[in-house]
Image (cartoon, rainbow over the protein chains, first blue to last red):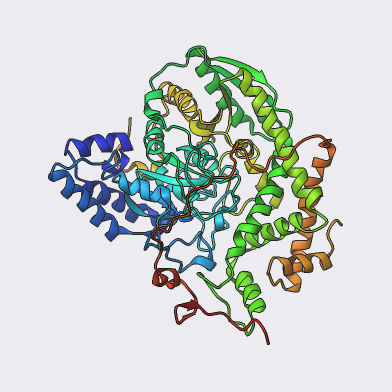
Length: 490
Length: 95
């Protein structure tokens, strides 16, 4: 079945004209048609636009024109990435009818590379959450067990890729929002180094932490997509002027003598024992391939969550001030401006978003700034220093991506328990480091994620380690039964 | 209690949110839980630690101030809840 193919496999068939871009798009649209009533990965499906874009690629190919590396490959975008002429809702009632007049830089680059957009995927409202349960519209389901969450906030993108409803997708990651759903859904998810990918056109949540990244069926695809979206962009002054490598060139190198640091705090009490066992087994495999693993300590790990839940809401409270009912989005009726602001925001935003705006506003308010926000920024330095020390000696850190496997929809009602989901992913955001999650087996039939964290701009190194693991684990392209169709894959 | 309902009302005004009594009480409780939890940061002595505002060693990024093509007025106003004469229309600010 065509929809099962990876980006690399599909691109090759497209180049050889064994399949057309139209056929590739139709296969994904058929999969959406068959499964998305159960999975609910998509907020918007742009079938007509997708077929028109696919036909355009086919026409150019038949004329022998030079095409981009992703020409004719259908993909999905998280619905907080601006798409010209296509609604971008952030899964919020406030932006339900917002139609951006421009494309995000990543969207522009994907279009230039020939990728075909299938639609926009579900998320926790404004990317605030770990399950998609905070979406104002509906909760996405995990393709491995539809009673469970796909993780979040990029849960729609993860579920779409896992269920072959897209050949790849983009997500955004502020505290783990690419890696945690990738782990829960058994796909590959990369948060690049802060500044590696332009954030222009991504609706901002916490600007010093947000990054856009690929969510793919395997590690090679992750490298292929990163090749297209990475690089300096004058419209994002925090995008880095650092050369973009061909990330696929790193994959085949072996990992002999690669120094792996295993931070003991990432295997602490809160981490499920089956998850730990799967990750330990993965580390043994890496060692058998010639890597050298040593236990290390990142002593400030436990402070990651409190730092994050001050910095992220503080930045969010400032970023979300723009949703005031004046220039776009929902507006509530009121007879003066102040009431209009307050009613618009109160009626348009969901409870988790309001809670974080309140927390952030409080942490930034006069009299509390030093005690909360500044204190958090200082502890952020200590967390970053832990990583700097580790990377003076080690090439890559290896950890579980999440403390548990995917949980049941509606089962986590306590806020702090939900926030603790991010404990193993937040460090990379606070320190700005690249990190990738790769499937490393199952616990109770549900996927477990293995996380590789690297030095700044060392995406090539973590992808190499992830690729070496994936090639030797026998787990590449494991499919959830719901998406496997009549055909067993590998 | 770290934060009183009165403070919650003040913060809601700063954040331009309007919360009803039930929401006010709920959020006050939740904020207190979260603030108690983040209190563990005070176990660390950070007197001589500089804050990390940003992870990249970037200074200001400048470019020449040249006019360039930008969105048209129609495109900018297309999403406006209310527009008139090429401008955003808002409710009265002054009585």
